[in-house]
Structure formats: C-alpha cells, structure tokens
Image (tube, rainbow, N blue to C red; front, side):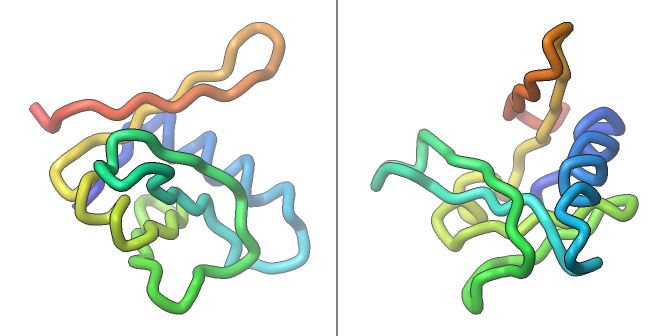
Length: 94
C-alpha cells in the first residue's frame, strides 16, 4: 500500500481541508498514461466508485485503479516551495 511521509500527510490534510464542503475530501491520484508512469493529483470532494481509499494520519488519498497498482509499494513525499507551490515526489520504500 502507498505510504506517506509526515510532510506529505500534513500537506494533503491542508489541501483537502481547504475544500471546506465535506470531511470526506481527499487527494485523488490518477494515472495519466497506459504504462502508469505519469500521475495527476487533484483535490476531490469524494472518491470515485472504483477508487482505492488510503487514510494515513488523517490524510485521505483516493487512488484510481492503475495508480493504486503502480504505487502499491511506494512512498509519497511532498514539499512546498517559497512561492507556496506544492510538489509531490514518489520514491521506493526503504
């Protein structure tokens, strides 16, 4: 299962908390190519019916099926730069 660093968990909670409409919001990660080597991430109010839902320390992720398979043994990290832009990185679990 995809795991999150402490930074990623905090950033995901902050991003999804800005939705405000629902406590069910999460960060949806989908695969944008057939080889599942490129991903898109966006805040979603609820998961899609086929999404795998991952909750880590209060952070909710909704993984599209292809992304869930590709990221099963990975770790998600996140950073915020000096301009407030968020970037995510995927690495191997050590």
